[in-house]
Image 1 (cartoon, chains in turn cyan, purple):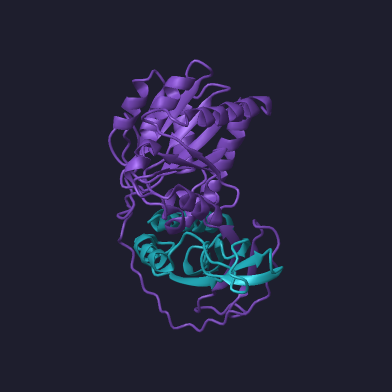
Image 2: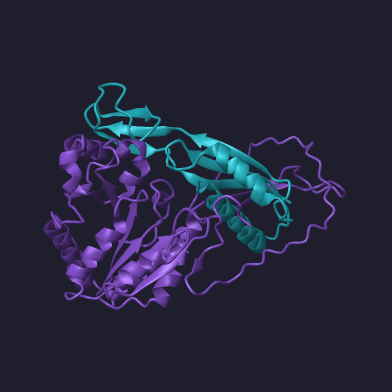
Length: 114
Length: 290
């Protein structure tokens, strides 16, 4: 349950950006959250509601989470594959020699501000 | 402020400070959510720190209408923590400090492992310990009883140490040059995986009383760890724990993980663990960047 501190990190970044770039209101936040990251999107939404409230910058802001699918490279098949967890086996050969190549993102992608 | 994991509520033992998050709720707040949001704009993704101010969504400024705009920031949510972690790591590298972040479930024997390790290494090079727990200074007291400087960091309701807490603790301890710094994280196999503290390695401790499938149940942690210690091996004759299966599970989430089997109670298997620390400390001192 570290989503709360991650969410506070998001708000801190928003505050930094607001100071640097002169906006006073965040209307929408787009987050990229990989399927293999350590974040549960529903928890993030819950925490965002709680943390955004009471902060003039973020009060009423909407959180949009963009899920980034997990991808990996199977060394035996020399192929890109889709994975949904770190412990998945290759769907082509059932092998475990795979390296995750995508889906670990936890990023603020962009903001709608005024 | 944080009701779930209490972040921002952490304190270093003996230095309680109160955060007053006072914010006035007196603003009138009237917003309409009726705007159409077409999310089409050119992406010019450059460096992570690039900032692109898109055009206003309306294209032109119309008095009386809100002028929303899109700001692309492309920032890692953990960026703030990672900045602190990077500073910690640079500080350790310039002072020849070999830092280990010990992570595990509660009750895996981290503190017993640390006490025995401290006893066996304290005459070879300086040691320091940062103890993370939600409450109490029991663990730091146990470490200090071995003669090693230890600082307790209570995270309040927080479920992990973060890099800023570690920076504060390093400044307070203090951590001598050419030392080994053990950071005992909050007992939790989930959250500490995501937070880099600036350590050289995460060491995941799994006791054989816990079940051999933990590397698959908590893959993020075993993926992030450079080493897995199987602790309490003196109990193996009484258990059904399948050591080989456990190691194969750990390698499945992290093919490069180093595995050491030991008993912090009897000292069995300690030679390999101590040799690994001695080698890490030697390299840290040899690679000192200052």
